[in-house]
Length: 98
Image 1 (cartoon, rainbow, N blue to C red):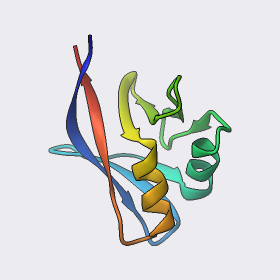
Image 2 (cartoon, rainbow, N blue to C red):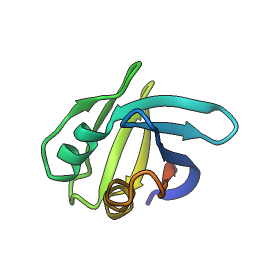
Image 3 (tube, rainbow, N blue to C red):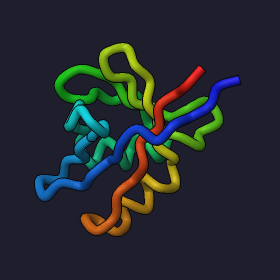
């Protein structure tokens, strides 16, 4: 069974980008807000800049970010809340711990 550890944040940017920030490392990728909206609505996958992919988890409760072969998750309802209250809210970024 997998466990999850909070490893960073999704931060809204003034340029309609969502910045993926890992604690201790800094920004590890960016996603276009419109593509995050489409992902939360079920359209997927979309690219993460500079390299990676974003899509929904199998039950649809989390947004998956694969960056450099490493899986990160954000709770879908937090991502939707961040977009709805742009740019005042953030979302937590979770890493999988085996």
